[in-house]
Length: 42
Length: 226
Length: 238
Figure (cartoon, rainbow over the protein chains, first blue to last red):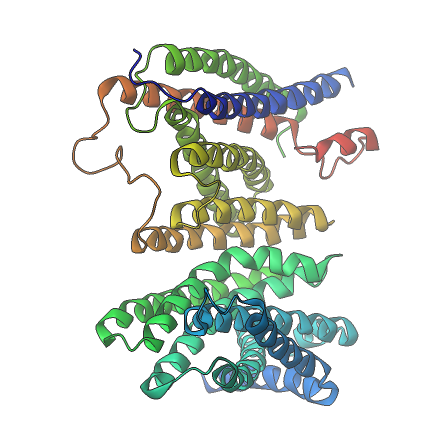
């Protein structure tokens, strides 16, 4: 897989992007899940 | 058809008559235009940015913001008169109502632009030469486009709490294409480019107007439902 | 309005889809990071492509759905259409936030700048503002019928706007990567990258459907009738 030597710092952007995406998606899912549970409790 | 136009003009006339009495909105829009032009002139770095490079953008920033201010002024109008209900009682079709408001807004914005343009020429030392006609055409087309959408949004947002904020927020995406194209066309007009380069932008502006004025006409009645 | 039992069922199925989608997303991450070649010129950050493009695709899709539902609502006046439009707008807003954050994170290492006023990036910003404006308007209107009507107007006008923004994209020279996948000719993306992208697109689409279903089933807390304010407080949370 490995190709040329790349500056390590660039990996930071990649990680940041993947983390942000995951956080937003999971976060929204959690919000919806909690509302669902609350709605079902009533 | 004649009746339709007559109704629309009556609506427009009523709007403008109130405006003529107060004059405050027109004056503030003009003051704003002047202020913008002055600030831009002093805010640029003379060494790196020539006046002519900035000119089209500055002109259109001025026009765009003045347009939004002009549309905002219609709020005061609506609120003070409860005009809308009065109008709906009268046998005015909703399409005519839209047209009337649209024309009134256009008249207002065009007035501001008509004053701002000569000022712009003076402040920016722009050599208009043969470009005047083209610039006016571009201005008319682009303005006609976003004022149409603005008229619809103004009617919607007048009932909301943060109307003066809501209107620009909603209108911004709709202003970007026509203003962007207008800047492109104006830049080319000012650099004396051949007409073939400019025609495309003008066609786009015309298309935008056609599509959106029609869409707004179709959609406006939904705002007036009981 | 869908009755509560049916609504709950839609929501629960939506949640299942979301769960599946999130698990699959982990798989995509693994695929993109471990089993997809590193692009020669852009290096590692290019892999952001595998989340950025699907997010953009979902945002655009969601927006189109909002627009279509808005138009249909103005025609048919069915409140379910309004509810659907609100759901897609909400979910679309989320995807456009992903798009707007991953975009600059990709741009900075590759082009040297966080933002570039090129047409495509401007388009993403416009989309974001349309979603935001739609939502802001809804928040500001109290009467449900008026809210549905007015936001539908914004929705349909927004949909009419999109082709014009597209036009602007193609009229400007841009730093944004030229379309390499959706070209009429064969996509010039090598297969191992293409398959990762397609897989990611599929997963994101599943997530989109799941989120919209859940949101639709749960409602949005805009008007809750008998429900207490506790629900309403959370309702506008996303």
